[in-house]
Length: 349
Image (cartoon, rainbow, N blue to C red; front, top):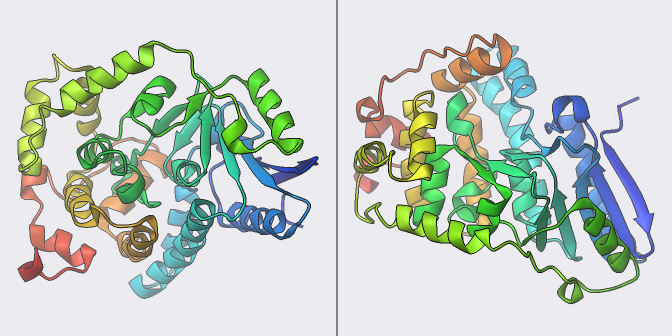
């Protein structure tokens, strides 16, 4: 019998769905994704349910992302690249189908996060109609640390408030605090667990999302937003990736977000940075559906890329934390190699 990784509870007209794989920080395995999809479908099909609340059963993490380690090990067992990519595509198709279902869910859906919201976890979080978190929540898309790229539709939802901000966050892989996530318009409000229970009770009694009292009384949010706007204004619109990298490194002592980014880049895959830059540029203005469709093929192709193998094995499997990246720096990554993975002809660049 499969282990239950999803809890379900009904309070009045509210269905509460909890991610429950605490030892793995709710990393999304194929089995867990299957169970989550069933839970979302069940709530949608139940006429007595008027709203859905998605949260974690653990305080440590809402969801730390996809179970990349399990996926990589399963891919390693396949004998050729076609089989490897087919297996990866099966995983990504399910994960992204759920992301899109949440994005277009036909009943009001609230997501409440405490602890880690990373990678695939942010993919689930981003599509909810109402996005709440505690002050202890942290957000990140750190895929460039394992030779991958910010997937799960991030090229849409990170760039939704502002393309420059979204591209910068995708490249940086840095961790955002709850205050930063609100200031940058990725979270609707910070609420504590006691008040979250009050909100659930209100929803269970039929109150609509628009009638909930969600004011975040934190004066530091406006100050944080201004600090970010000032830093991002230093990044030119018409520039190359090298221009941005040089500017961030030269001004790391002046802007906190630049300093954190420069530190992350010391261990990131240069290939991933080059790929992310071009992919986010191409996806600018695309819908979440369009990005997730592209992500499916991208994820499958990248599952056999040398940097993905090096990053996952060094950081998640062998844990020596010393991946041998295919290219030494971003300037050495040929554009043709990036466009090949993007499935774009060089004359269309």
